[in-house]
Length: 538
Image (cartoon, rainbow, N blue to C red; front, side, top):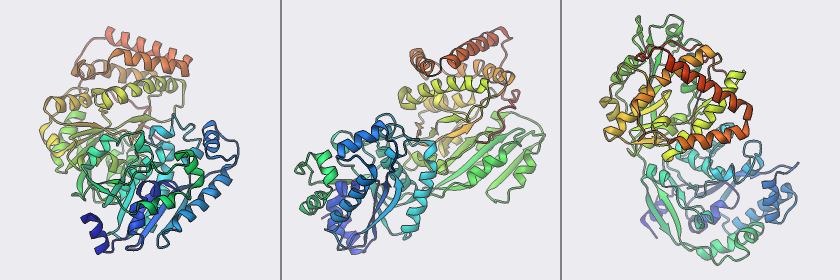
C-alpha cells in the first residue's frame, strides 16, 4: 500500500470517482474503489446514463447489436440494474446517476462514433451539457479536501474528454485513471501529460473483488471481453498533478470604435466560470482614438477589474498592444480583439492551462466564424473551413498561421521581452519572435472564440489587402504549411460545397490580383476599419 493511500485513510478523505458511463469507474479503478469502500467515504458519480427511443443511427444500431439488444431504453435499464448489482459488493459506496444523455444518443451533435465521438473534440453545440454537468458536480462535491478520481480520456471518447476537462478545470486535487479497456489499444495523451507534469501512482488492490464486481456487467462483459475476464490487469495506474500556484491573468483589449460589440465581449469574460488554476486580475481596454461610445460603454461597467486607458489620438493597434503589455504584470497576459465573442465559459481556464507548469510561453486557439448571413459570408466560410483545417493540423497546430491575432496568451517573460513594430501582421510577428528567441508555443484545440466574416466586398478587400501586404512578409516557409495541404483541404471543401468553393477560388484570385496591381505600400497598424463584421450576435 502506497503512502498516498495511507494518507487518504488516515485523514478520512472523501473520495469521488467521476465516471463518464456506468461501468467506467469499476473497469479502470475497481480495485481501489473496493479497497477504500469500507475505510473512507466513497462516492461514484455516473454522468452519462441516459439514452432515448426513436429512429436509430448506424452507430447506435451497431452498439445495440454489439450489446445484444434492439431497444436502447431496455438496454439502459438493464445496464443500470447491472451497475446496482456490481456495487452491491461494496455496500458502503454511494452511487449517484446524473442522467445526462450518452454521446451516442446526442446524435445531432455527434452523428457518428468513428468520425465524431472517438475524435475527442467537444463540440461547441455541447457547451450547455458541460455547464449543467459542472453545476451538478459542484452541488455534490462541496468539501475542499475532497479527492477526485476521473478518466485520463485514453482513446479520446468525447464523454471521457468532457469529464476529464471538467475535473481538471474545476477541482484542485485530481487523479486521472488510465481508461480500461481503451489503454490496450491507445496510449496516454502526451500533451495532457505534459500539461499535468504528473506523478504516477500504480496500485494492485482487491483484484478478485474487482473481477467479481465487473462480472455483473453481463451486457458489456460479453461485448468487450468476450466473456473472459482473466485479461483484466491487476495493476491500476493513476496520474496526479499536485496543486499549483494560481495564475494571475490580465486580458488586454485594443479598441477603436467598438461600441457595437464591446459590451457583449466584456460580459462574456466576466461570466466565465472560476477555476482553481487562474484568477482574472484585470481587463485592460485601450481605447485608441475612439469617436463612438466605446469609452462610455467601458466606463459603464462597475466591475473593479475593468480599467480603461483612453487616447484622444489614434496610434494604431501595435502601439496599443505595446502600452497594454507594459501595464500588465500578471503571470499570463491575453491579447484579445474587441470584435469577438467568447461563448465558452471555460475559455480562460483552457487557454491558461498550458502555463500552469510553465510548458508554454505563447498560446492560441481556434477561431470560428458565426453562421453566415449572406452569399459573401457563405463563400468566405468555405475558404475559412479549408484553411482552418490546414492551420490546426500542420505540425500539430504549431505554425505561424495558427497563432491568431484575436486571441494570444503570453507568459510574463514573453510579454516583457516582445515589442511590436509599427506594421501589420503583428499576430505572425508574435509567433516568429517567440520561435526565434526560444519561447515555447502551444496551440490549444479544446476551446475557441468567434468572429463575424465581412458582409461586404469592400470590407473583404480591406482585410485581404492587409493580409497580402503584411503578415505573409513576416513569415517564411519554415513557419508556414506547404501548398499541397491547402490543395487537399480545398478539394475536400469543393466536394462538400462545389458552388461556393468555386466562388471562393474566383474571389480570392481576383482579390490577390487586385492587391498586386494596387500601389505597394507599407501596412501601418492604423488601417481602414472593417465595419460590417462588428455586429456579433450568435
